[in-house]
Image 1 (cartoon, rainbow, N blue to C red):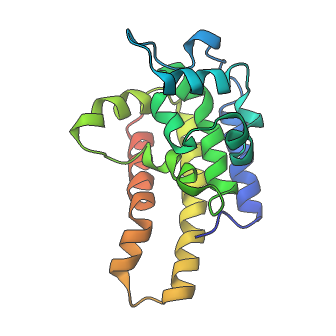
Image 2 (cartoon, rainbow, N blue to C red):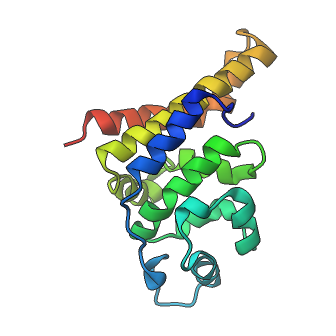
Length: 187
């Protein structure tokens, strides 16, 4: 599946992300990842790779250059403030580079999917950092991406294979429902 077509919807979605996350503060060099009582080479590598980097300058290609590990794992190691600051970069990778960014493009979507009890609290805590405007920007990207992915799927497979559609678009369906629910229940 491809990223978003370069449409006015994509341009608007990207503008919404940039505007909604513009005021999120850099977490500081020592707060990019959660601290641990033991040495964690993955966390250390992620922190070193992102140190001093603004989310606006991160693309998939840039992430691959600065971080030698699995870029799709980065979001899961970030501190709460690091997650809030760098999430828009992953959201933009999802919208701009969906096809070329392997599993990394799917990270922003998976952050809104239920991943079992083990991660439920972690995911809920991270979702709670977003403002209503940020959630709306996230929903806009997911909505546009969903429309494009669904259109591409139906062009390839028609309307006959709903079970395959659920497999290929299920995470995006779930993420879209979840972020919409968060917006509707926002205090």
